[in-house]
View (cartoon, helix red, strand yellow):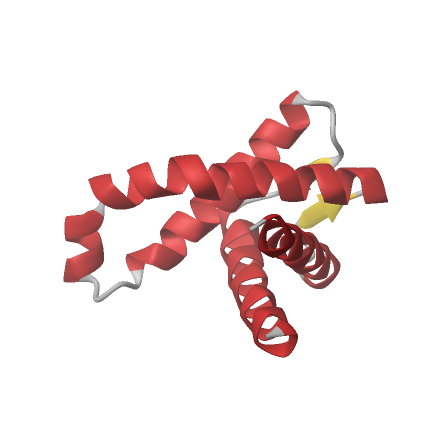
Length: 117
């Protein structure tokens, strides 16, 4: 279980780094920031995302699951907000950048997970 959590952590860190490099509106500076943002992102996805998904489940059904992309963008945006509160250099300029970043994080996580398995 610990091994799986560590792998998931490093996949998230790599995915956030890739998103920061590819999306112009995402700013991330320093390896320490990447690792700490990955921890924050993992916690946000573990504790807050399920609650948001539960509250918006009807919208997700109506949109055939596409609203999940908006939720993922919101989680990334919320992660940036929290990271700034902890003094980390991780910011997202606007919701479009968060949306594109969430897409890239999702795709990168999926690809890396498949490669590692």
